[in-house]
Structure formats: C-alpha cells, structure tokens
Length: 79
Image 1 (cartoon, rainbow, N blue to C red):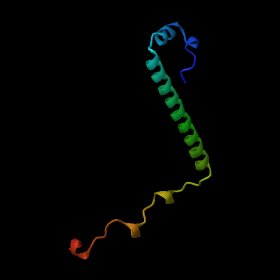
Image 2: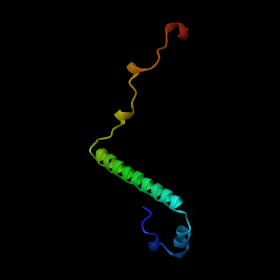
Image 3: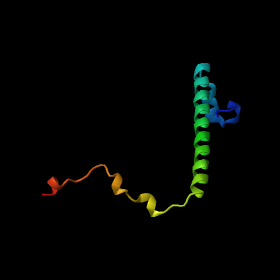
C-alpha cells in the first residue's frame, strides 16, 4: 500500500507531493491492487505447500496409460 506520503524519504516524498490528486489516487489504487494480488498469491502458495506435504509422490504419477492413448496403430500402417 502507498501509505502516508510523509513516511517516505525526501526524494520520493517530494515526487509524490507533486502528483495531481487524480494521479495520486490512481497510484494508490494500483498499489492497493498489487498488494491484494500479492496476498492472494501468498495464500494460494501456502495452500499448495500444505497440500503437497499431505501427498505422496511416486513415479506412478508420471507413467502413461497406454489403454487411454490418443491413437492406435493399425495393421495396415505396419505393413
């Protein structure tokens, strides 16, 4: 979040103070949206890590079921 302009160091504070009100509001909205997306990502990542710790991973997850293959070779093709 953008927060209070007075909390920033001199060069950035001066720059922020020079922005028009609509531009400053747009910047605040942008920062708020960015922070919201970051929080969503962190929540999702926590769930994924938690879920992964509950699963057992084996090579079986990487094998192919040949009965479910997308194509079949006919005898005519082999000849």
